Length: 264
Ligand SMILES: NC(=O)c1ccc[n+]([C@@H]2O[C@H](COP(=O)([O-])OP(=O)(O)OC[C@H]3O[C@@H](n4cnc5c(N)ncnc54)[C@H](OP(=O)(O)O)[C@@H]3O)[C@@H](O)[C@H]2O)c1
Image (tube, rainbow, N blue to C red):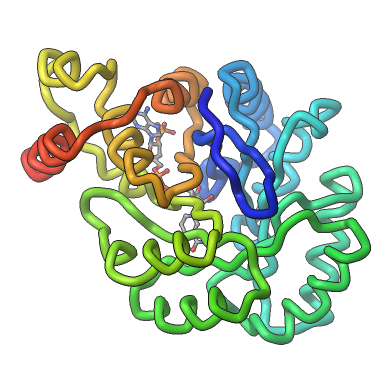
């Protein structure tokens, strides 16, 4: 799988795994998570994204990684207005993820100035690799740009797919200018893929599945570092990873995917 640089020279494979909703499950569903994580690692993926907002997802991800933790690049988040609670969230993450979080993100920019203050100290102490910030809403992109310009983070996480292109206006150009990594949430429209086009259309694009076509559409934007599609299906995880081997679409193929998306 191809890799790209996520700030400070860290190379990561371009297709990872999101865990919102899909890993917020009870012990009976742990074998599902184990299979999905194994499929991602088997396909060459390393990036796993989670958050305290996602219920049991962090613990389920940690259990699924097990003794393969060192093969993973764990991106998770701090999501609270309270510094004391933020530190408790971080302490649980250290317990789950072997004493280190590879990318710690301020979720939805909640209390970002206060949280980044102690997160920077944890990074300097080596318990956090990189710092980041996320937001799902274009209404917050002005504030996100402010955090980006602060010089205090190395990566952002934002939505981007043929339906959600607001990041193209300011956020992606700014990330490129500042050399920040960009993780793409909701790459498959949070499950709004629809039936997708006929097989012949996919073959013409050099892909096997509609999900792969959409992921390649995103990764064809060189300002993107990685996509983090969520899934409960190991076969989907393996299929999504194929997008990381594709050479990328040119402008005409990209426009074709946008047209197919509108018809889906
Ligand atoms: N920071 C934030 O505010 C924020 C907000 C939203 C999301 N995120 C992060 O971004 C990640 C991804 O976003 P998301 O979970 O909203 O949605 P997504 O990845 O765009 O879509 C996930 C859905 O797509 C389906 N899917 C995955 N692979 C597929 C395939 N090959 N073929 C058909 N269907 C497929 C999954 O169902 P199956 O289980 O059937 O495969 C699941 O229902 C999240 O999990 C989370 O880590 C962050």
